[in-house]
Image (tube, rainbow, N blue to C red):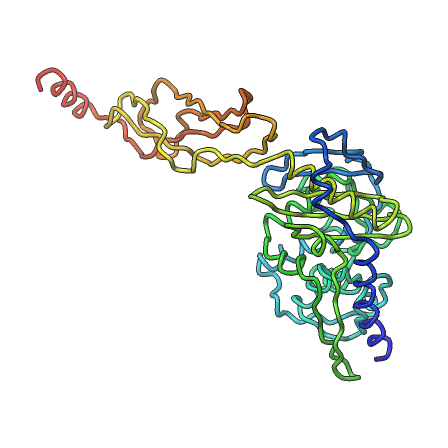
Length: 397
């Protein structure tokens, strides 16, 4: 009881001390930043900026180097929690009983006790806001049956996302041999979590909250303070996750959104926490200052018609299959043009949705994307009788 009370008081005090110690003027950073990426002076060992919608890399430094990721690991833990809820394997109100192993985790924690029961939602909130190691391991055991099984799931998910420089050994990121990731891989899993499960932002943008411990000793309140200072310091910040250990030094996957542009900036092995936040904000400033999002014609928009050979109809309208999104430099001309390329004809029968050509988009003369053009209806092959009737109409009517 006394230990938890001290922890609550300390978390609030530290949040104010940290904010006062590391004030950042992001407006000045934007004003002074040059448009060339070489102007980004990054002291962290590895870094990358990725645009979230397209996955385009806007800047990188040693982005494929395998390094210790610390608690940034928990992004994958959160991703698998949300996957499990989405698949119906678990529910947000499912009760989770804490094991001796989970309760024994050191580092960042919410001081769970063995046999204590918390809901999936409470543990997930504690992971996302307070980077709780004990909550992460409790959820790993709940979903995987054991932390070892859950780690196998983490590695399988990493493989499916083409995270080629990642090997997980635990669910929380404590230093251990061969627990390694690259900055690019962190950006990939951050993108997957934020785009697939945007509801995570209700936790990753929460500065302070609390949970209730219910044990044999009774009920006690425990305060959660977000480890990610970006949400207090940076305009448009949406998350995501900090990490620090003796081996990893200071890591951060920072996400933000402005004017429809969503960015992920990752640093690994920064020399101190102040540099970690400064450099992520510097990279986000660079991205927002120099890039913008453009979109193509909307899905389903009519884009012409194509000749149909030997069909019950002579022509068929075509439409845009998918709306494309592209990231372009603000130094390029803003006007986007397109070119429609259609096949000369299609032979009946054709199904609705058959590819009939492409629409190609250009900005400043450079191709930035393309989408298929597809038929808007099914057209059957004409019978002999139908063809004779058409010939008669063509000749005599």
